[in-house]
Image (cartoon, rainbow, N blue to C red; front, side, top):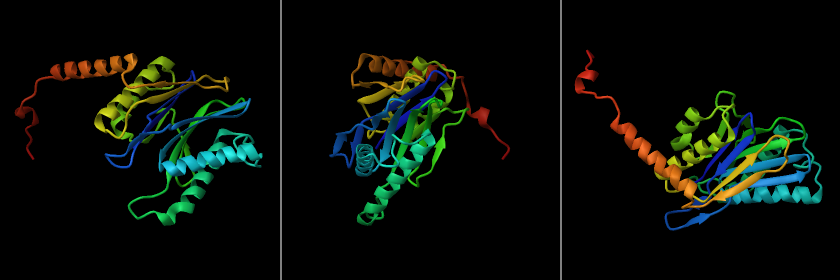
Length: 246
């Protein structure tokens, strides 16, 4: 499984992705799901992936091939971030269709991507690219996108993230969302890849948070302690509070 988060802020962009993949309980591996592409000095792309790992890797190989061969359409030639999203979506569709016949009805070859970054002087943005090849942007009310095992950590993002929150707070919320998801689903876990993008930089500050990292341990301990405290402070209730005439 996979869990990737991208957040769009007034200060810039935040990306967090786990690295765990599995094909059964006895086949768990670690693969990078946050990929950084800088095909020209005036642009930067961050591609996060979920779904079929082989499809993801072939899409990345085709992106790099097009850049090396100077293809007419590539990440080096698109004029807008949405055009890059459509390009990634087209490649993803082509790869998935090419392998669809080899998959049973219980599995598919599709992949889903989050594409973030900046082209030229356009404002940085994040887009979710569906297996069908189309895309959506994050909304102003909820300026974040998730792919993979999204349900367990969504509430924290909804409560803690808005466009004018500062970068450090957004990162803490995103990592807390990861912690919540990893606790609920063993197919998601560290190390976590983190990327921070400042508008106009056309370069990503990125690093890896490993299991047992002091900062990660502090966050995990904080949430455990505060949740227990919160449960102990819940208001008293009795069956009479829920009596109904129905």
